[in-house]
Image (cartoon, rainbow, N blue to C red; front, side):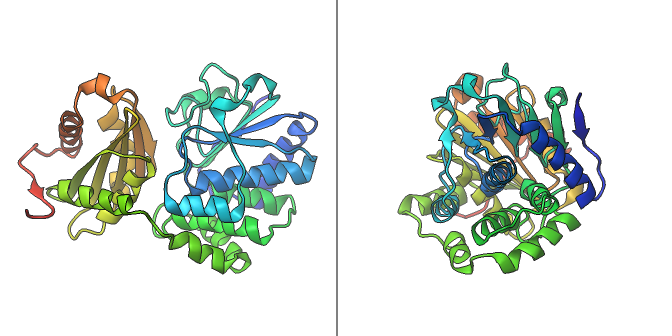
Length: 353
């Protein structure tokens, strides 16, 4: 029997209670359980995975394994993992045949942003992005694109199952919602706001301060210099290229930063991590819908998607697809401007040289 939920309505504890009770009973006695999230996980992916692991442990006595591909590069995320003791494994080091149940959190099958083999079975998907066709084949599905964070969905499960949310777990969930929605400034609904307000007084403020203001190496600031130097303005759109990067999250971080430029409503960023193209998009208006725009410009080159104001994309084997990073930037810029129904004119540099 397949149990699915993809209703674009305000979620409530009744629904979360029904669904979470179902998955708990199904997982009970399964033994080895795997929780997979997307590669190079952000706070939302880490928090939702940790919360699901905690829920399963409390309700069934089974300790699930959290795994993902890639690494964690952004300083805020590293501090969060260290301070809050989030344990995980590299998916490539696991014998996947040993797991009797596989859960996927904050990602979906065959999206291109996770390292779980496409031919393998996935039993449970919990996500807040638009549902993918491949997800429909899974046994348990809770996909809520109207939510700002997967962490909010897991918070509702914990509440519905009357699981105590201690300080560490509260801090993880709160920071996930805070970072994913930019303090309820983008892509949030009233469920996100409710979770945010309920978790806030339970947090460890010292750890939150350390997470949000981490010390960074000089190379971190070098990326900002590169982004500013290479940023090109096309009307209300800005495109930047970081070229070679040592962690994927830096593209999204600089995209967020450049959204502060006066007159800019759309930002598209590009970088290359281990021969893989990394794209990030930000918009200031829901109507533009960054996720749909990203899918248009990356079609035939890679995979991508997202929400109304934030989106990401990946181009596997970048050099083999279109040659140099400069050529890829030119093509993606042309596709962006075409999608916006504008001519590919000579850009204006953000910083005059």
